[in-house]
Amino acid sequence: MYIIYIGNFLSIVVGDKIGLDTWFVHMTKEEDPKEEKPPRFTVEVLDKLTALMITGFGLVAALAWNDAIKLLFKEVFGMHEALWAMFAYAIFVTILIVLITIYLSRLLRIAKEKEK
Image (cartoon, rainbow, N blue to C red; front, side, top):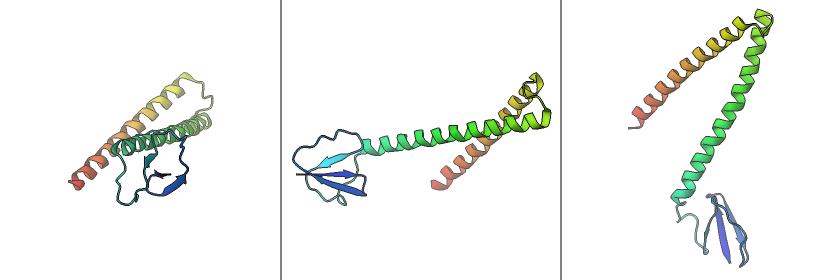
């Protein structure tokens, strides 16, 4: 009999044969999950998976804002296909992204300094 630990939150007892093959599951012979630390590989995979999911959600939000800003330019400047309006939009978005990136970089640097 095996106990399968998924993180520190869930344990599943199964029979002698296990057909589960995944990186996110750590299998042991009937051990106490509180005494065992998760393998470093599992933590790294979950860390990277979380970062990728957050990036994906950020992309979805960015696309939503892209549509909203395009609609705003269409309302303000009329035809959104006008060449000058598209360049104005591109310049506006570029400046906004640069400012946000600078701000977030400063926040990260301050947080790292406080951590030390």
